[in-house]
Image 1 (cartoon, rainbow, N blue to C red):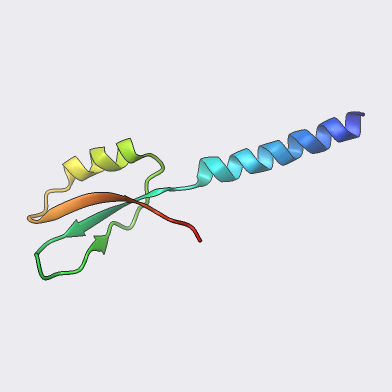
Image 2: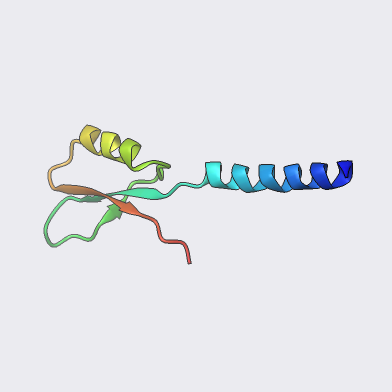
Length: 71
């Protein structure tokens, strides 16, 4: 019984650590209309932090936060 408990706790901790380490949002910057989107080098875990960083980016052009889709 104790081994099963330890194994289940271990699997739970491994799963939670991978979820906590995941980064789900990219900050995209488009400096001109004819340019492609440039990805900010640091992904963000929460959309709120991405939006806060978006307000701090002083680039003439457009910015947006986009969810990363893992396949």
